[in-house]
Length: 363
Image 1 (cartoon, helix red, strand yellow):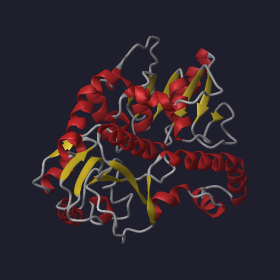
Image 2 (cartoon, rainbow, N blue to C red):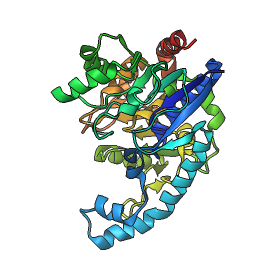
Image 3 (cartoon, helix red, strand yellow):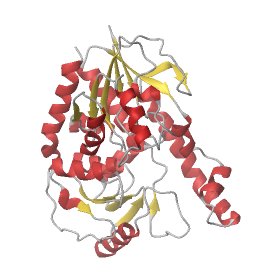
């Protein structure tokens, strides 16, 4: 039996990062006869943002007094510890390589037949502190077929020097699939290879797949808020809707002294994350993957756009025909009473094209 390796952001305590990796692994197991292995590469930029330490908390909350930052750290600590445990439990579902790598100066001892690069922002030099050679397959054998799947650039432009370096690195990748149209626009001038759009791995698997990982939650009749940025309009809309409907608000942020009207569920691991989305009456978010799962589960949702870096959401909304669910930055939502939209059906063609992309390459 041959072997396929996956190299992506699998170790970050980030819902989307874990779920896209898990979905790609499971699709490959279901649709190929190869052994599937997630290469256990844990660079510092994946680990550092989620590290639990008082020193980091004081630095992150430098706008507050040390006493208040300390109090917030102590309030948030139990949820952070529980979330870490939930992610560690979820990672047991990944078929990790025996070797663990902490910097990009490693050589893959196993001769993988195919190496899947992505998904996620593996080609974002801001995230990876300059381009990381590992995410271009530079650590694998020449005989390994390198396939970028739903890789994302995550930036609006590259500098001249970044373009020069990237052009050379792309020469090592045999097939290039990206997650959004904006990445095609950035990469096509740098390579003669065809660059196509792939479905995010969470959308690649059959939607019914995710029902196997839904956990019962001890809440009902609630509005779910998951926010990566700090959009005050989103929070105002959540409070307004809660007041009109009598629903409670569950919030994927650490408990805060000032937000007594929000109930924190920040302790959640990735499977709890999708379970809360599945059980919510309404989802308000600015997150790409929270939007994906709202579409998968047919939820009533509204996605608030960031003033920058919203192209992947716009691109997905165009294909899924749910642009009416996008809220421009600074605007308030006009809630609709009736919701009976099956947007996931609009993404079927993209999912099938993405399957064909992989099946046409992998024997």
